Amino acid sequence: MIFLRYYIADSHFFHAAQNERMDRRGFSCVEEMNEYMLEKWNRKVRQNDDVIILGDFSFGNAEETSGLLKRLNGRLYLIQGNHDRFLSAGGMDISRFGWIRPYEELSDNKRRVILCHYPIMCYNGQYRRGENQEPKTYMLYGHVHDTQDQRLIEQFQEITRSTMAVNTQGEALPIPCNMINCFCMYSDYTPLTLDEWIVLDAGRRESKRRETAQDRTLSRTLQEGESKCSDEK
Ligand SMILES: [Fe+2]
Image 1 (tube, rainbow, N blue to C red):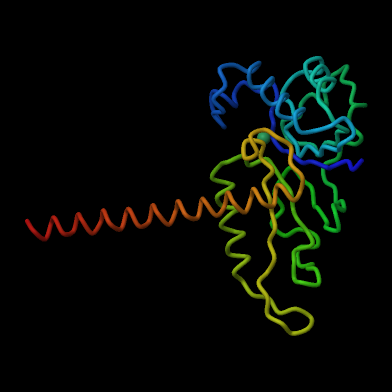
Image 2 (cartoon, rainbow, N blue to C red; image 1 turned 135 degrees about the horizontal axis):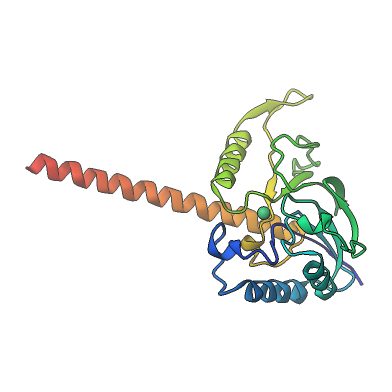
């Protein structure tokens, strides 16, 4: 049987503010949010699958978080986030995690993943490509949720990917920039494999690009209409 490795960031179990402010997730209470995320997690992950959590896993105390950890499927690994306060709480049993680290680099199906809660714009192995120029390294991150900071990172990626660099063979190629925000709301709170995140991220950014293009066309049409009206006065 093949076991899979999944990734997910910023679930913020027990964090009521994710409903009231910040993400505005739309659950009526934190218990409903926790149960929804738990159900999504366990529907996908089997007991022997690996799940790498990219930080901000739980805002609960030691008792709450220990209870949650007993109910989640999978072999768990934690990249530490700034809201994982349960880690410093007295009485917390962290043996459920295979490891807890601030940063890690691992192999995943012949590719390399750079793992950190915080986005790294210039990451180790960024320029590595395969025989067919396919990307070999992905930087998986969390922290920024779906905020203006994420929009800025997306702009940075677009600029980087449209900038040419000359390699050691003298060829000019676009600079690779394969950063993926594994934000839990993007996957409806489901942990995903690297391949699933690559597909989801590309689709999400493409639909964002289309929305922006439509907005620009609409505002141009409105501006033209306004100037036509003022000409007619
Ligand atoms: Fe977070």
